View 1 (cartoon, rainbow, N blue to C red):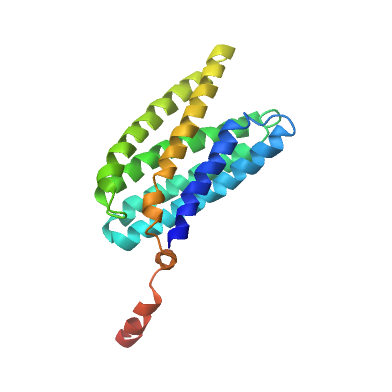
View 2 (tube, rainbow, N blue to C red; view 1 turned 90 degrees about the vertical axis):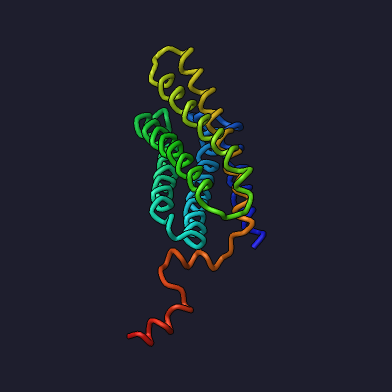
Length: 211
């Protein structure tokens, strides 16, 4: 169903708003906008991870283990972002920073696994073009994540400012990475969601006969 392409497009757009319209969301009304956009983005990213997993196991059941690992990382990243969004950095700095750190690190590994899945699967027929781009995006995500982590751990304002720049770079790179999945979601169908629930309805008569 073509309408499924709206999921990665909306996810990237909301992530863009959350990344570029506000900073850490310490004070009102910035805090409300930051919380709302990151919460919405976290929920959409959760859906993205789950639906992509169902798409992979529909087309390539042999990749279910790798896809499941990626989905778990995506879910944890989504929860980390949710924690960061709902813990004000002024009052709950530890939880805010912990949530952000968990989210960024899990997203880094998530992009690695999704890029490997792009190499091994055929979900859109455009993998010849998507795979090289996603390799570059994944390398950028890994390098910038390391730089962000190092800079954020410093106390000096200059290094904290650099960490904010790296954080924006992470957001922009991830948004472009998400947008590239318009290709896969163009071929996604609602019936694939049933893969998450086990056997399909059309398989049940055979199961009943065998029993």
